[in-house]
Amino acid sequence: MVWRTADKLHRALAGRELVRSDFRVPKFAATDLTGRTVIETVPRGKHLLTRVDGDITVHTHLKMEGSWRISPASGFPLRDHRIRLILADSQWQAVGYLLGIVEVVRTGREHLIVGHLGPDLLGPGWDAAEAVRRLRNQPARTIGEALLDQRNLAGIGTIYRAETLFLRGVNPWCPVAEVPDLPGLVELARALLEANKARAETITTGNPARGSQLWVYGRAGQRCRRCGATILRGSLGPQLEERTAVWCPHCQPL
Image (cartoon, rainbow, N blue to C red):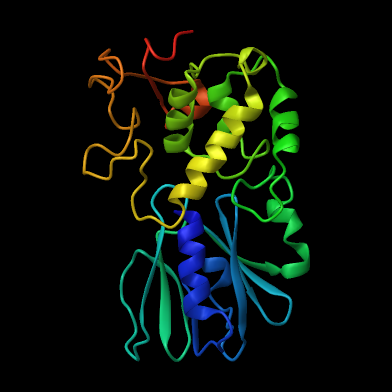
């Protein structure tokens, strides 16, 4: 989703002068980027960086509920309490709803925001060996927790964690040190993200039919498509209570 959102923002805004910028967050309410040209929008892990001339970056993050919507530019102001940011040129307007983060920073200081992130699975500088090295730094940690830690590798969320671990037959509670072929697991995660980055819906089974796209994610209590066992769901720890693990106990034994 983040890669696709960045691509939409880039297509709508890059290379064009802003005719409107409306920051609806208290700290940046007075910020005005009107008249400045958007250089690009790039994803970094789950972060979105919209770079504007003048060493300016608009940093946004969707978190769990946020979204960007692109529509033809309109002269009418949008009134919706969910809107956090509007960026518009003469052709298109990009409206950010319920964005978890909205801030303006110097482009030269982006490292203070995303410098802690590990190799980006969809980034041009993807470094699989470095991602594996970072994962192995905490050998006793569960692979389910380690994959979601963006300091290890940036871009994996709960869907791709669940689907990658299922396809590799790895239990979410397996310690990193005991994961067979960790490099292969990492590369599979990248392949799944790459295959789905431009799609509106995630498909890991190869079947695009509604209800058949995924192996285990969102299917707790249902039968495994591969073995027929009941798919389970559980929390990996107090810091990840909102991010439950989903797995097949037969295909992914601990």
